Length: 296
Image (tube, rainbow, N blue to C red; front, side, top):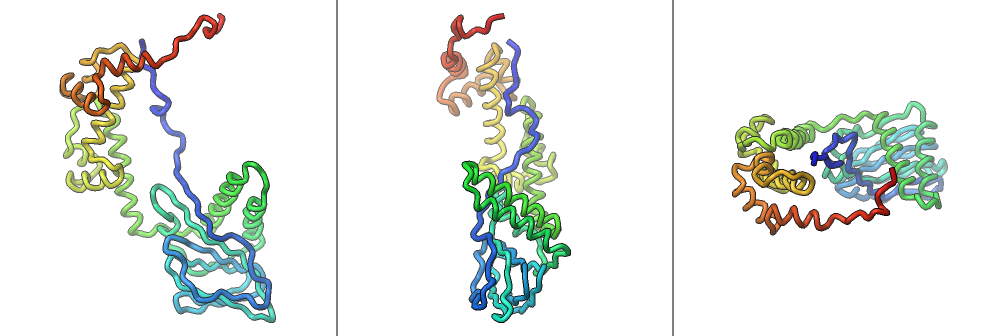
């Protein structure tokens, strides 16, 4: 029987893990007595304050800013701020506070360096993008949550494309380490049947062995050799369930030094021997009756 790859063995076209937390998103003020008392933004949040009509002022970390139509003020987690305006000429603002969880980072937006104030060249364009999110928030559709998430991400992508905030240098350096761990996984997956030493593995991604072991466990939850052993056992399960190879052949194909060591590791991890695992896998497969076999 020819070994067939599993779907998860195929090359990924795209994979992303994104979480959104929005504390407010709306149009505010327009009344004479509007003001925001001095307060502090939660440490894991970022806020965008856009002036839609008339002027107002803000004090952020002790510095006063005068804001006019089209200005966008950015406050970051931990910033202290307050707002006010001329009661005779009430302003209207579009205000957002959110966090974008991405790749294990609680708020990836805080890993970028924003200016405090920006001026939009075409304020009506920003307002139009903002209105799309407000429309999604007001939706009564059964897929309302997806509509809101899609509209929010589209609005955020529009804002980031306009502002182009660079990544913080410290974050870039940390991100490069994470990328090296991802590269290390790819490198090892392509060499599972070969002997891999920790020193060789670390050297392949440009890290020393001690540091490599520490950051690998931090990012994956497993020490490098434990991760490698687990991946080899996963591959062995695929061979046992879908090929007629012997235990010795599978041990060699999955990079184990000997079939005895492979069997011991397999039993320790799965609680049964490789051959028993194979029998159990075939027992779980449903029999196809003659009626289930498609006519030719």
